[in-house]
Length: 339
Image 1: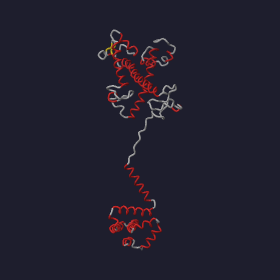
Image 2: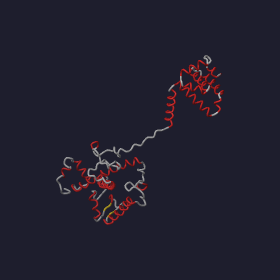
Image 3: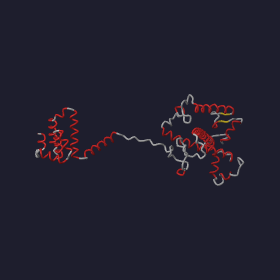
Image 4: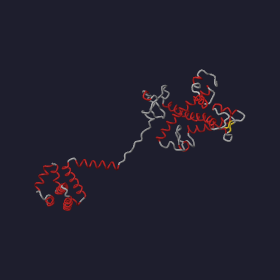
């Protein structure tokens, strides 16, 4: 009672209680908790009058005179009572402030995790073979494999096992085609621009030197590899290529438990290009796209060799020197190779 008299010297206790009963119904319930809540409520009113010193002094008197401060449970009850009494006067202002503080605290302590986007070359939204005019693609072409553009008009890949076998065959042919295309062009490039003396730089004629008296020197260097026996070449290729292919398909000392199409590991990926899954997925797409282009290029090399009897680089230089005269129309009716 003395605490209330000191906090409100200009008003009687009857006047204060009547005003509080009229201002908010919730105060009727909170008043039953005792003069502790009422005295602290008076301290809050004093703070609105900018009487901070009086608030600190009178609140400390109330705290010392109250027996509720003797236990942790009563302290929690006191704090809960104060929040409820104050919210009855402030309405929804304090909940909003508390919510804003909670949001700010969470924003400072919780970091958002960035989701890794999937590659655009996979899944149902991948690019199709005719772009937006592709229409409905076969249901079995789900975009799981790299290089799947949804094109299979003949239905070759309708069976899952057949699809997997064709994909393996395509991948192997693509890799050999990339090596073959490089091997067809390199001797001509070195002979034309590098000054390397090849007896025969054209790819489909180079192998015939093995049957000649002097044999074949790889890259024109007799100290590198000198091939003169066709039998020795065949045996060497069968052993080396057979061993590598056997390891790839069946596993072996360097390929136990690895994927037969993408073995990777320390022996087949020493540079670690496939360590990152996203990078590995992109490299698969690049490999099959370049491999398909290389297969088309090899087919063109075969056709040029039959029609013109020249190598790919020589055919290109002839066409660039006279595009109107040296082109496909010139050889359209020529069925005699080399003429």
